[in-house]
Length: 460
Image (cartoon, rainbow, N blue to C red; front, side, top):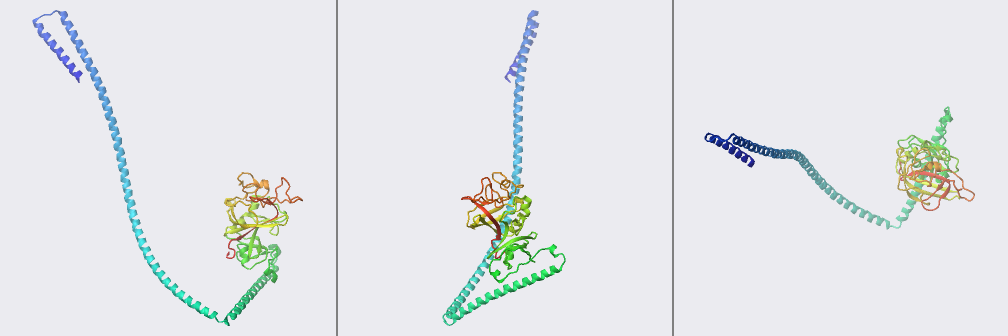
């Protein structure tokens, strides 16, 4: 602004000088050269003034532009801040709506809780009243019991009645025993009669020998009181026998082959060992090495061998039995010196989707444990599964399918090899043995794996 004022002042001064020069020209007549130089000076002065004015205007325009740019930036920032505030306001409104909805729900829930509490209080009152009534009834019963005890004590004081009561109880016991014996004999006679009738009917039919080979073992009075010898016949039932315990609970006491049909499974034959008071379903038996246990995965699923001798029942059949209830696995072992040992485990077994993995825990026994406890171990064969921690294929090395956790562990399906004359296994040959986690290994001559439910007396 100052530059502009100076320029205006300079221009007015030049104009006034020119006017003064014009007026003085009437009075005096200066020389033409002076007039020309005066005009040039004026023009130069005017040009310099205009030049400075241009520079000043340029600087002013630049400053004004910068100020306008700053104003526009501030306006943009203000617009962004305003937009963000608007969004936050909308979010706050939405949250407020949700809070209102939540508040209404909480209020409804509070009402429901109040109603429930009122109902509970009423029920508690009813229960307290019933409790008082029960207490009064119990008190009355206690009084009656005390009276009965007094009466019984008075009766026991009579010396003549006590011997008679003892004699009567003995007679009752003997009669009950005789009645049970007669019932068992009658049931056995009825069963044998039915068996004879069934055999006669089948003998009358043509092609009976090709259809089915079934015979029923006869029992004598001595066999009813002692453990029966093993048979090679198959016993069939009209009902669905779930395992050997079911058959035992129906009165059978003979070892032998029976047909069972577990839940959700087809019927198949098993060997039942009817131990005194504890029946077992045999799932594996090895006695002389006559059967090769180095079989494929499919063979181990379906089972192989002969139920009269050495056999493996089959993973699918074993799982169908174990899947019905809680079962115990019993392992019976015999070494080459005729020493016999056993061990029992609680058993949980998975299905085919788990490769029939088992989880065992020792219950009792007279030999150290040799199976992996507290962990699931899958079943593997030479053509299926690679389940060991060291990733070695144990079935190929040890010649038999088993629940392998690590190689060189116990494998009761391993190759059957007789020891040397000294009773030891030859170096480099892996045989059938039991190897506890601690202690020495036991070379085995015979093995047997069996199952029965934990509550076999009530198992139906």
